[in-house]
Image (cartoon, rainbow, N blue to C red; front, side, top):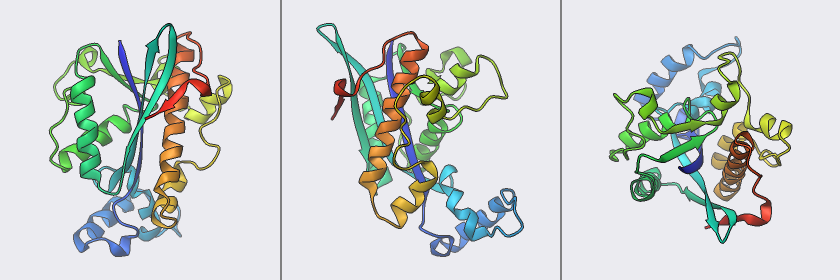
Length: 232
C-alpha cells in the first residue's frame, strides 16, 4: 500500500472583512450569524475563522510525506507545495496525485482529514476549475472504495464522541510535538500580519512528520527519527 501523508494550512481569502468584495461581505455576515457564541463578537471578529470554510478560505500550503525504503532503511520524504497563488499550487499537487497516487492501492492520510483536509482540497480544486484527481473524486463511491486514511478516526476505535488533536496524540505516544512554534489559530496572523509564509510551511511540515509517525505507532511500526527525514 502506498500512503501519502498530508496536511494543509488555510487562511481567509482576504486580510479582513472590510477588504472583501461587497457580495462576499453579505454572504459571510449570514454565515457568521450561526457562528456567534458571545454577545461581544462581531462579524469582523469572526472573519478570522473564515479560513476553515472552503467557500471563504484558501490554501496556502500543502505539505506531503511518504515513506521511501532503500537497502532496508526507511526514510520519510517531505515535499511542500506553497505560495500566494492557490491555483498554481493546487495544479502542482493534483499533478502529483495523478502521476504517483492514482492506483487502487494508494491512500491519502491526514489527521481529521475526512472532516477537513480532503473535502477542503476537493472543494478548492473545483472552485479553481482544476479537474479532480481520481483519488479525491469520491462522489458516488462506496465507503470501501474511498482511499482515505484518518488517524483521528483510527484513534477513535468507533467512539463517535472522541476528538483528539494531533499534539495530544504525539504527547501520549512519545512523539515530538509539531506545535513547538505556532499552532493553527496563529496561521492567519502569521500570514496576513507578519507576511511569513516560510514559517507556516515549516509548521505544516512538522505536522506531516508527526502524522506519519503517529500512523506508524498505531500500526506497530518504529518511528522515523529526525535524521532519516528528508526534505525535497
